[in-house]
Image (tube, rainbow, N blue to C red; front, side, top):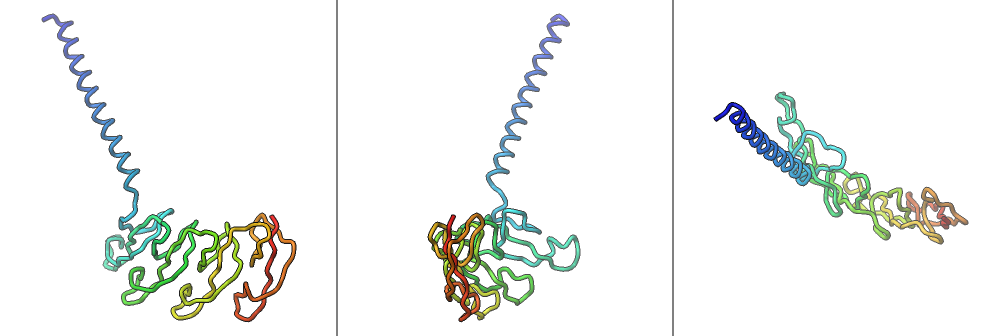
Length: 199
């Protein structure tokens, strides 16, 4: 076998090995990227809560204490969705009920509040307002209270539209007339202004 033929054979074998290696590596990278984008952090435990997530349980342990001998909170991460009960609210959501329990507590034996997350819609009665909506009356219930057993205001959310009597004037809207009644009273028995929306 000539030297030139031997060099060509070795070069072709080396190129075949490099091509197989490149193909294998590209497959590994593709598999890694695909799994990273499909699994996310929903359902995992973490030492902090990143943007875009809430948490629905707290575990007090030493995993997040940096090697210390004290317990630190570790959070069970969840992607916020309509109907999830979580330890905090999330941008783009409101909540329509607050419950109490130990799942979100960071102190042994002390109950903490949990929020029933809702995607806002026209006609939802919620514990808070949201900029994309207005509200046309309030009610009072202990279901929205941050203090157990104390009644708090709830808001009947409405999509802004011309001719709607609303308790506030959303951004980008104005009003043509006002009235005063108890529909929007955050303090019971104290009349407040209601606005006829024009937009």
